[in-house]
Amino acid sequence: MSYPPSYFSREKKIKTHGQMLETLKTRTQSCAESRSLEGEIWLAKRFQQQCGQDIFDGITDSTERRIRLRAGIKEQGLEYMIVGAKEGKPINWREAFQRLYHEAL
Image (cartoon, helix red, strand yellow):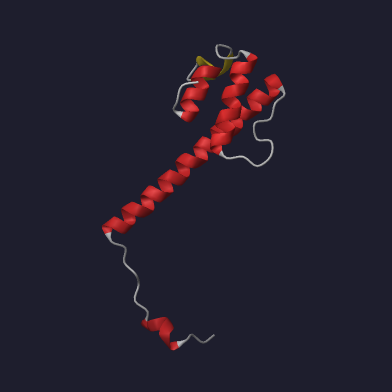
């Protein structure tokens, strides 16, 4: 196997501290977005089991799903119905929505 002459003369790029922090920040945001999507999927499945409505129907983004879920919870009167548990404590729909979207129902 032969290598091009430039293969051995390349200098390795060394990331600066700022570049490493930016990379870490991007990866952290990706993880947070992934956890948020996982939470949305879990809550959407629970909502579909309970009400038969799919908040992921069609092409949606997080904002559209939040609007649909909020309207569905209020329409069905589920605000204080238990949806799951966190650390052994029951969580109602209102609390689950607030934890997921960081805003009040």
